[in-house]
Image 1 (tube, rainbow, N blue to C red):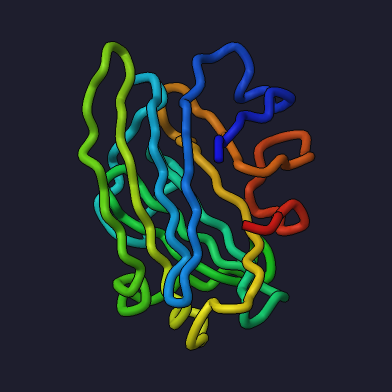
Image 2: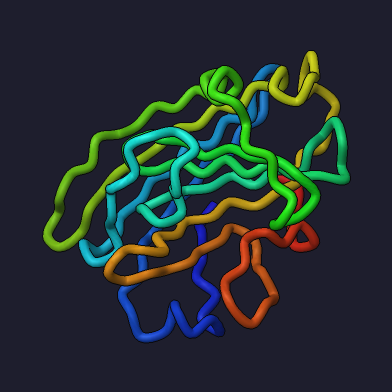
Length: 182
């Protein structure tokens, strides 16, 4: 699937935007998402150096997932180009609980080292989220709902892309009402 920019958002207007492809697969044990990113140098930022840091400020790909064990909340898994992960859950943007390191370590992250092609930075990330993180034995038979995002809030050229449309006036990824089935 292709992540698209909402061109109604002022932040995405008049700039060269990243190209982001995502491949989603679901097995009994894992939600597996592979992102391939090509972004202009002005969109690329890589400053975060720890899990549960401010990942959205860097070049970041994100998986927001309605909790299959409790549909009243959703999880956000935000991964930088270096593989650092912010993970939290809660019912809305203001009531988030950050996951402890022992749970973050269960999320498998495999990065593709960034390379340069002209004025583009090319990088990739594979993220495998285990069913056990939600207290489930398996994803088998479940419908998973969510959205995928790419952003870089503190890059020289901030930008905001999503797999599924978000009908808001400005960028806002914490909107589970716009989640769709993976």
